Image 1 (cartoon, rainbow, N blue to C red):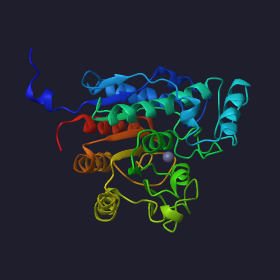
Image 2: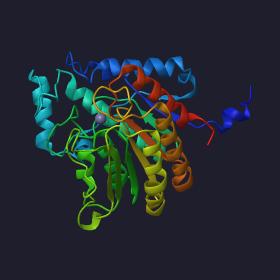
Image 3: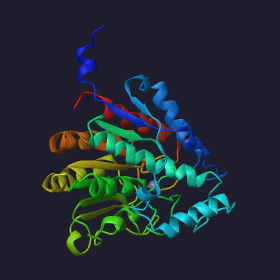
Length: 326
Ligand SMILES: [Zn+2]
């Protein structure tokens, strides 16, 4: 049967997931496998799976991880996991034996996603991975993160695939300190983050005064949001302040640090968003990608600790990326 018009128009969206992500198992920890099980269940019950190009990722190579992290640090994570240590650098970065391999598969999924979108095999993609990445520094695990998945994706675009302008928008409720630090001296990556005011929330960085350095000055934009900010507060900032800056930057590729922990029901922070704001942000960023860079966008899961809200918001986010509307 020939494809219907809606099938022709439908976005060719990649969904990167692997059951290996469940094997980073550190017992009672807010960042646990149940988060991802809930997301996959929600994607499945929304009937999205048949519409997606489902991809199982390969592990990132040492060279790919080395685009962002020191080799000594990478070795330290490997040795800690395989040696039976209980955490890397701080107790909130708890590990199990599989954690090193799982982390490589999270970073590898992002590398594969950006390559597939850059090559036109996919229009856009969502990477449902864990552990998350945006707090991981060049030489340090932080905030449940080991390898900075999105930074490795951006570095792949810039240093391997010849891109000159990559936009990262991070709407996780926590500041993406690791991502910011990886690119703060570079004008090739525009990093913008909306997060809860660092005076009231982990990791305590991401003040408006942090604007990049050297040639990268002005290519970092932090918007700390007061506790209890709501949908309208976020959308005002995105539409009136950030989108004009994003358009001026003229991104050739857009990456999202998609954390859903700014939801009002999330236990780890005090921002009061509903799914409406997450949907609106996804729609705005998808429209920006269509306008600036042929739709090239890869969204990467970061935080979100209320199973129900995380899974509803992530499935809806994915449905928006895949939809032919807007
Ligand atoms: Zn977070």
